[in-house]
Length: 129
Image (spheres, rainbow, N blue to C red):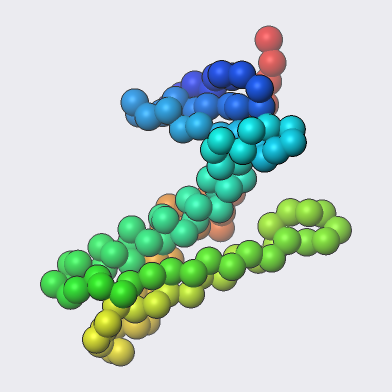
């Protein structure tokens, strides 16, 4: 099993150390300093950036320009649970992108490991001591 180390550098800051990177998080003011994204912000960003690398890979593998390629990610939160209830990703294809490739571009983005993990969530176990 892979391990990630979590540290507490002060205030409301929490950092994850993973593969040589320190991934900083903080809480917004007034409880934190707002010096870094919140953990949930990073989770949301991981959805879009993961889909993005697959979309970019699809475009590049066909020798097409990625100029203008973008993804807009929209989120709905349940008013009852305050949990994420829906995520919509809208891909803006690159300039002059062949329409025949649009369904395949969507399929490529759907291969994102973060999205696939959310589709089949893992079991969580939290222990102490």
